[in-house]
Amino acid sequence: MSGGILRPKRFWKEARAEERPEGFALLLDGREARTPGKNLLLAPNRAFGEALAAEWGAQGEHLDFETIPLTRVLNLVIDRLPETREAVIDDAAAYGGSDALAHRTDEGELADLEREAWDPLLAWAAEALGARLEPVAGIMPKDQAPEALAALRAAVAELSGLRLIALHELTTLSGSLVLALAVARGRVTPEEGWRLAMLGEEWQALRWGRDEEAEARMARRKAAFLQAARLWDLAGED
Image (cartoon, rainbow, N blue to C red; front, side):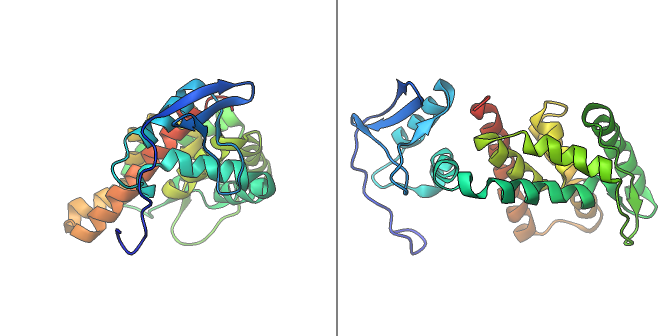
């Protein structure tokens, strides 16, 4: 038992992915794995299927749910996403109206850093996505152009399955739909994307010092962000 959560004992020796007409099934000692909803656990492609099998193959004496993130997200996509897809799209698209890259410090060194780091991504969004967001300085809100928000929503709504979940995760963890799309579409690497998202936090830490608990929380968020980027890549055109 760990953290008060019962960890099931490992009951399989071999985990592997087997190709099926609909995708790649996870087999545990030759038996098909299923989701909590009793659906067949099917990966969209060989790379994802093999990564899924690797998660299960790497387990020790007991199953640790924290170390099977691909399985957990695939369960979610198969069992729940068909009914919640529109809500997920709405939630991610809503970040466009308050995108972190468009909300700036009033003035000073940090404002200059934000302008230098974030303006190129806003310019990219305008050119590549047709979404021109205007930077907003200070605490007063500013409505963005409806056509820009519509373009961002369209970029989310065209996604399905695992890639929709991956983009949603990238967005909520960074606070920026523009940044999430830039990482997903290869405009910046996941590591660079996280650095850009945490520009203000890093500036504050360098100026005022680092807090151990805050650093630990940030490390967990970064790991989740990088895992979401890996999910996007593994998902392919699912």
